[in-house]
Length: 66
Image 1: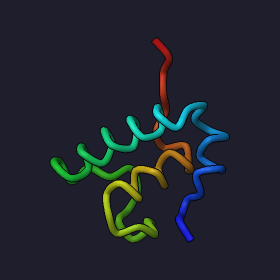
Image 2: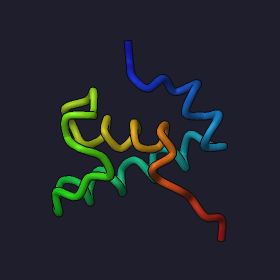
Image 3: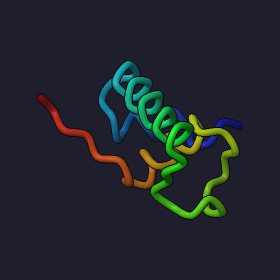
Image 4: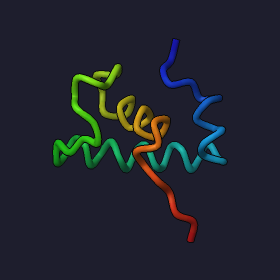
């Protein structure tokens, strides 16, 4: 099972495309700068993309509309 679920994430972000964009950008920052919003032991995912999605679910990443 994928964690967090896409259905749960789409209640937070209104578009799959926006979700992918946000997660990809955040994962890139994590990989390049090793900057995490939570302690590394708190993440269930081992990869940056999964960790970025977990941050979206927990509300650690906020989005602003242009």
